[in-house]
Structure formats: C-alpha cells, structure tokens
Image 1: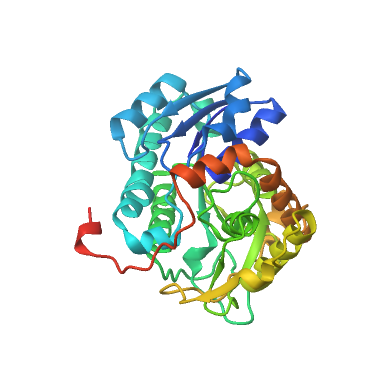
Image 2: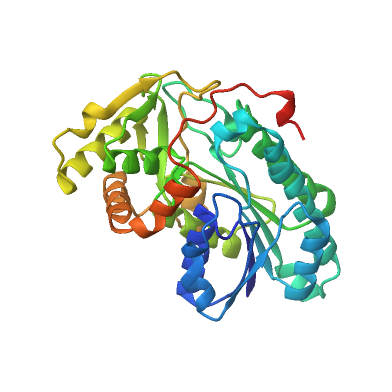
Length: 356
C-alpha cells in the first residue's frame, strides 16, 4: 500500500512515519510544509530507507495537492497536517483557519476528485483518515468521559478550527461517499515534541535551571497518551477502521498538570542533580484565556472494535521522554537557539492584524 502522510515531519506525523517505515509494508509519501514545528531529523531514517519520498507542500495549495495525488497515486491518506498550539491560536488565529479548515477542505476535495477516478477495486480500498483532537469536545467537569457521540463545544481558536475540519470530513463522507475515517486523541507526549508544549518545555527549562511556568494553580487535568501508542492506533484505524466511523484514542492516564510538572522535576533531580531542587523552580502564572479544565477519553470503541489499547503507562512514558531529551541535545538545542527559546505565548488578545 502507498500511504500519503500530511504533516509528516511534525510530532505525531513523524511517529506515524517511523512506525510505518519500521514495519516495511508500505511506501510513504511524506507531505509537509516544513513550518517552525517541523523536524526533518524526526523522519531522517524514514527518508533514507528507500521507500519514502518527501514533498514540501502546503495542504491549502490546491494545485500542489492535485499534483502530488496525480504523481504518487496513494492508496490511503493520513491527514495530520495542522497548526496545533492553543497559545499560538490565541495570538493569531488566521493561520489556524487557513491550515486546519481551508487545508482540510483542499485535501478532501482533492482526494474526492482523485478517488472518483480510480478503478473500482482501488476505489473500494481507498481511505482518507483525518486525525483530530479531543479538544473539540470542550471541557469536562470532575466526572465523565468524552465519547464518540459527545457534542462538540470547542473553546479556543485552535479547537474551533479542528472542530470545523471534523465537520467537513463527516460531510464529505455523507454527501459524496468519500471513505473517510476520523479519530480524536488526547494529549500526546514523547520524543521529538516541539518545546512549546507543556512536557518538553518543562523538561528543557528544568535541565537549564529556568523557571517552570504553570498556568493557574496547575489543577487542569489531561489524559496523557504516549505518541508511539497513538501512532499504533492511527495505523490500525487506516488499515482496519470502518469508513464513516470515528474513534477516540486515549492513554487512560489522567493527570493534573502540576503532578506532571512535579514528576518531571523529580526525574530530572535523579538524573541531573543540581544544587536547586527543580520543584522550587515551579512558578504559577496567569491562566490561559478559555483554558479547558479537564479532558478524558473513553477509548472503549477502538479497544472493542479494533483491538487497540495503550501499552505505555504514564510513569514509563514520562521516564522515557525525559531520558530522550537528556540524550538528544543535538535535536533540541538548535531549536531553543533559533526557533523557540521558551517564552510565554498566548498572552495578547487577537487583533485585526492577526486576521488573514
């Protein structure tokens, strides 16, 4: 099978590509615009393996996508390309609308045109898998879980843009018959995670002895999913999922943000002793606007129907993640120097200048 992966050099996309390459069953078309959060190093071995090609392209570029479909003739699409950082969406929503909504529309229309022209056997086997987030469901109270039929209630420009893209995918299945698959995941973490997100930011700041900024009182709860477990789920969905269905993917590992940061502090103190205890670096800062209180996934459907379940506990996964960043300064030090040094994002309200 030939699989097109958009956002292939991103955090989750690269994990998917590495998994597919390690299995050796498929040819890969790695599509990525190579924005600030992309990392060619994360798919370096994939591209060197001889069964993958890189296409530098924007998913919102109609002509570029048509050309890629025409030249590569994929059997499946795994659409991961997206702007994903809530804080950046608060500062400037325009790029989130362009990539997450317009880009998904371009991908769906281009895939539909391509799919409709396929021979019947290939047409029946084709799949378009859209990868989304649990943030589209909004915020939970102290109890309850997000199910596949939970009503959408996004609270940030990021989650609203992803919710819109999910609705487009659903419409293209019901209106045009495009064989789509949709999955919504909980918070991912693991190797090659761009250091603007909570876990890598806390690890790197802690390694460097810098303050560890925690929103509010750190009592927001997230269900943490190790990225390699998520990659396994996504590959399983594209191969065995039922068109028109949606699958929630969660790590079954709810933790308060403060506990996550404290765990990172303790692991760093063990592995990289310092005169200052890392917990003393924790600083509570003004909360993010519209900060959802709790996310938690009910992943019983994918467990029941496709046989997937997470294999990495939070305790194991966070140890592996801390150890990876300790061992791979070559990857993150250039990012801290040239792309993102750890400054706070999302403080300013959106302005007219951010529209477009």
